[in-house]
Length: 278
Image (tube, rainbow, N blue to C red):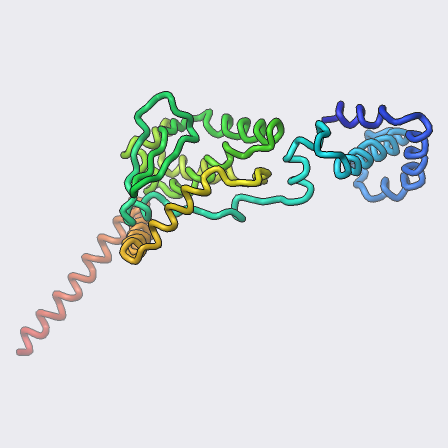
């Protein structure tokens, strides 16, 4: 990127470059005072106006360039400057447990010749290629997302992570997808998988104009919008919350058992007391 900035600056004639540098020199002291000393201590005084001229003029030209310009073709540059759409701004999908309760069946795509992005949803069945998650998965996805946004202005990898993070938002949902052969967990901990997928979406800006799985999200939403499926999904959500609150750790399970035993003991004492009185 620095090379591209210099290329645009060097294309100007000497008179234009000198005028821009002179304008920056007039602002140099004010700009210098805006930064902490630790930031500008290693910048030679004569270099600051040049940096300001190159960066500032590059941004202005970037906004004014014609569509056929090589820089303007990078959609991430325009969308990053104009519209920053974060993952939370997009539609979300319910987790796998809730969708299964709404009579959606998860199946692994059997063919080995499909892409990771080849997810389909028809007649209540969602088919997903197997996602193998190991210690390298997070790094691979981060590099894919960065490459797509820079080279093509796309967000297919980020959209895929958005889909999988929504489906596998908890250890319980990861367990379900693992049983359906949709996820192969090489980390060994289902909670770690859920945390990793959701961590991938932090500080991500979507620059693509369309969401790769928009049709699937819409179809799933319509399926779950049926009255019978709404009730089923609601009960599944309650059950999942109950399992998380009471069975997520051994200590919580022990506490629940002790609470039940205490309640039974107390109820027994009340019943015995009534029997004696009668």
